[in-house]
Length: 268
Length: 268
Image (cartoon, rainbow over all chains, first blue to last red; front, side, top):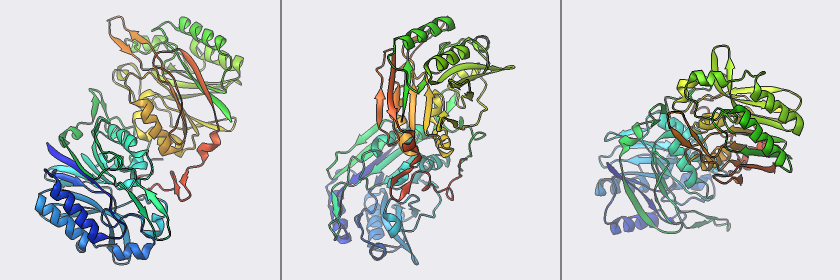
């Protein structure tokens, strides 16, 4: 068993230092930090960046920058594996990425495959494989926000062995939490959707309101925990990742085994 | 616009003539028959067949037998395109199949790809492609009951142009109606899930209770109509199949166009 959780909060647009301080305070106030903790998409920069130059300006590389250093510090100080969204710079590329950091200093990056709306102006399309990583015997996959909409994302992660899908998000529509029940049910995996709450207001007055309701979903599609729409909260539950290794929903129906890859392509 | 509907009712196990009479009465009582009418899986035989010999014994071929003849008669007399589940015999094979019959006498058969539990003892696995058929300019796909569980089924049908997915079912678990919202949302298609109600009791005393709640779902994941759990009812709504041709959920995000088939296989 491990404890898996999300940190739902309200980052301020463009204020990385302030957002780091906000997370510091939330972690200090928490009585117990889970073994695996997921933060939202673009957790420390805010979402509604105005253009590619600003995304590039706020981006870290995978091994250097105030965001990844803060994430590494939290992993080390709490002993948790931490997953969070951040803008990642790699030479002249910038990605809407997610990083997994371990207390020991291992880092893995996933770059968002399916970019939403004007993200297409800000970020390069992700080029990392949908491949889970093994952390202390638990196979952890990452996908980011709008990736949920494409059944291929979670399907490929689960076919490659993901037991827990970490899902940093900045959701503005209400569909996702219920749809994650289907994503988990069809793949027999756990998912931790860490959404933000509050709103972003861009310099031109454009505003986005985020839907909160971060959720931990079980392999039977059950909602293990769902946060409120507008609360800053660290939510966590105990889960047994081994339960996601059993793909049999009846003694004769396996969610991987029963796929008819003679009638459709194998995906992986 | 067309009117699409389901006929939810309670077939008696093994009593084909009685079930045909039951549907006759339901259609006679209906004030209005939709252009497209979907009946449940194994609609005229009941579901809980005891073995392969009984399935074979009750099976029709695609062009001969009391079930397909009744379906053809209803299509002709009402002017509706009718889709219904039936056991289909083809030489020494027997399939859990669905047939689409038109008033003009065209017939198309789909054989269930993903067999549930003990269906594996009764039926051969389906060998027909997941390929929609064009009926009067509307592209109609078929899948049967447990096929919903596999995201590949509806995905492939929609990638091949299905606008309306007809989904004869005998559901015994409660997940499907809500999951169909995700199936339609992720593929921007309509779906008509025709479930049965009531129960089957086999000769050995085994009993299955069916969940009703037949549903018509729109391409935005909206529930257009949902039946009660235990009513015999013909339910129908007007739908515009052309709405399913538009896969764009934002001006820049198409549910087909945004697929990252460089990161995962194309499926079709």
